[in-house]
Length: 137
Picture (cartoon, one colour):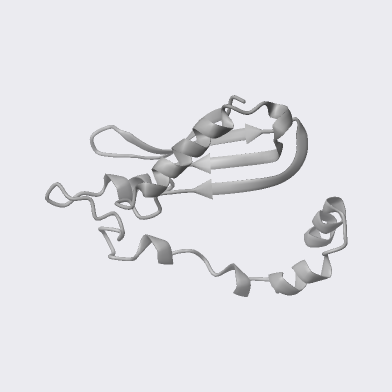
């Protein structure tokens, strides 16, 4: 199976280089669930990259009929963290401008609108279309 590979540009550096995300999308012949796997949230933690690349190699040996649904893989989800260097050393764990941990700067979706846990529990036996319609109300 061959993935669709696309690039999402994020920002241009002073050098002219463009930091971007590369996404590998594997799609089976039948629709189904989606899986999203990312690696390298902390720039210096690169072992996840190797795991994703091995997964890409494995998925490429399959036929589209062997996959139901989609798998999206992002080997480097934090190119800025990978690019951050201090004295030839990649710390990558913290944003060099404000010192915040990359793994702690996500929004708290739970408090913004509805109680997502209660909504999810109330939709367990419904179809995907019904769930989407109920969520949009």
